[in-house]
Amino acid sequence: MKAVVLVAGKGTRMEPLTSDCPKVMLKVANKPILEHILNSAIEAGIEGFVFITGYLEEQIKEYFGDGSKWGVSIEYVRQKEQLGTANAIGCAKGYVDGTFLVLNGDMLIGQEDLKALVSRTEEAVICVKEVENPSDFGVLETENNRVVRIIEKPKNPPTNLANAGIYLFRESIFDFIDRTLPSVRNEFEITDSLQMLIDTGAAVGYSSLNGRWIDIGYPWDLLKANEHLLKDLRKRCEGTVEPNATIKGEVVIGKGTLIRSGSYIEGPVIIGENCDIGPNCFIRPHASIGNHVRIGNAVEIKNTIIMENTHVGHLSYIGDSIIGSRCNFGAGTKVANLRHDGKNIKVMVKGRILDSGRRKLGVIMGDDVHTGINTSINTGVMMEKGRFTYPGEIVKH
Image (tube, rainbow, N blue to C red; front, side):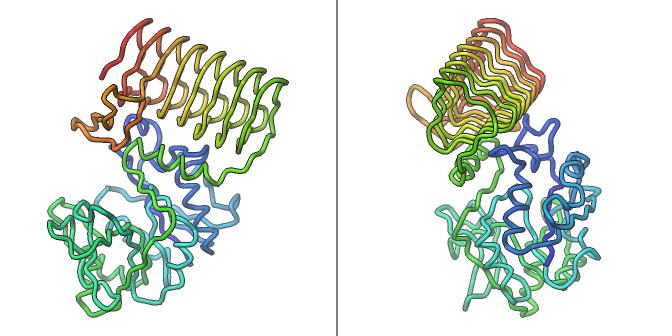
């Protein structure tokens, strides 16, 4: 069985992190989101993949190649225009036969749920997740364990079964995709194709997700995904740890990395290759530090993702943040991650102020950002690629 993986989108809600990187290639627990999805599918028995690509597809192709590194085959089909999910899945016509999976490149799912899905025999199966706020999702109306209707964001949801965007299809779905008309958003929606299939009387089932399912729609969702993935971490050290450094719990240290004396690292933490850590720094749980990162003297880092080739100067603090590649923190840079009133952090995304749902959230920093010494950064700040601050500057918005 093959899996069609939708990886064409830029992920505009993930900016500034996606300025130079496809959303699916953003790293969580030091691996691209897409690699975690690939590994789950492989563990569920999938041996062939079709990646539907678009934005900065060269990065995806360069990293994954033909799939031989993972013992699978990977083919690539470019979606010329972003015309909706039905259009994207339709690009796989001629590349799959029989039964196939459809996965989203920005949704983490556990292997056990995928194993349960691939064993189903209906004409189509929709993965669902029971949610507390079904009116925010596409919701399934069911009867006798079959799907009878798919309703987008209903005011009075008939169930709490939200469409998780993961499907099992047979080749027959392509006939309905070909007949699908544009929606009110002027996109070709796979839910419309599915509704036509349901209306023919075909058996369309649903499969409840009982394990991990994380939809990465906004930058702070990366922190949630990172926390979940680091739960499976098992300690390993391939670098060098100097005397009087403390390594506590599940900590992974990559090849060529040096942990200097006096550093205190409390897992789960993953540190990539060729990093220089310390001396006398404090790295707290749920930190993911990429390759070629420098963490200076007396730095504290907590629940943060730091991408490759970033330097954090001495006497700095970063908490609950996502830091892009090639950034440089001037000495004494501090990131605030908690409001004085303890309320959820709000963030400006695409001109709208959104509630992140998190009480603690620091900075979302794009690539190549440089801060001057003693810079202070407020909660929920988004810093665009290439920005810089002056010494002593306070970044409030």
